[in-house]
Image (cartoon, rainbow, N blue to C red):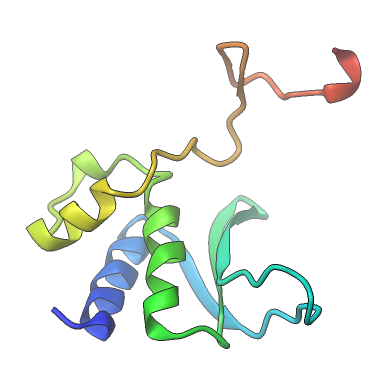
Length: 112
């Protein structure tokens, strides 16, 4: 499966989880670390912003990483994509803190 087909399948899967995908120019300083994009929670909705200045190969990682925030065991995923997603580290669901094992507790660094 080529890179563009993988991207298409990952985008389709992301949309099934309610993730809005936006391709945007991410302006960055020349000497800063380049980011291909990432997932955020905006006004209660998941939005994945992907830098338009990235290659097709570089777009796969933010898509796959965003999907790892969700329970992928609940849906059928093609074996090749499942294998790719299994190589991505697990991600904590956005909007949920798990500081000191307390799920749902907001982390307040000034209270340590």
